[in-house]
Image (tube, rainbow, N blue to C red; front, side):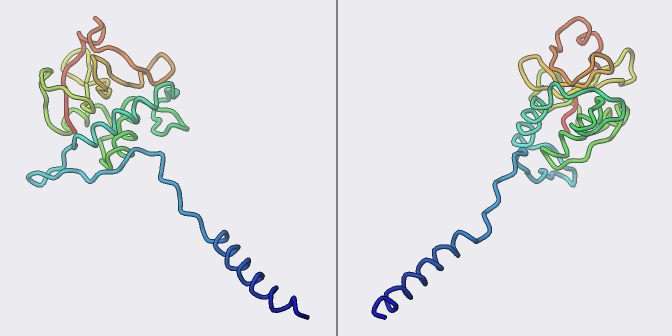
Length: 171
């Protein structure tokens, strides 16, 4: 009977310790790029440098995703405007137009001298925008080509793309 007073505190201490193990774990941070509120100037949202960085990193991570006309998720695949809409939504919380024609007026015009990562590069054969990508630095952009099978990284300065570059926009 003498052991009983000793066992009660041991059992109570064990129960307290085990209860600590049963608490809900703190959720791990999301693997998504960090979210930033859009910077607002004059009532219009614009991409912050942090959002531009996040969009660039996220876009690079989607290289290799299959192309699919009308696609707008990594699971379903992407077309060029679907890739842009997905990246800017996830990385910056911005809603972009869902067509290349709409991207022509989204954000502000930027000169090639002011081009920075996260900017849109818009291409076409004449004055009509027919294709778009996200500039990621060092003369390269990420895009979902209509042929070629998957999201890829290419150089703007190649003869094909440099002849078709019509505009640069900063969301």
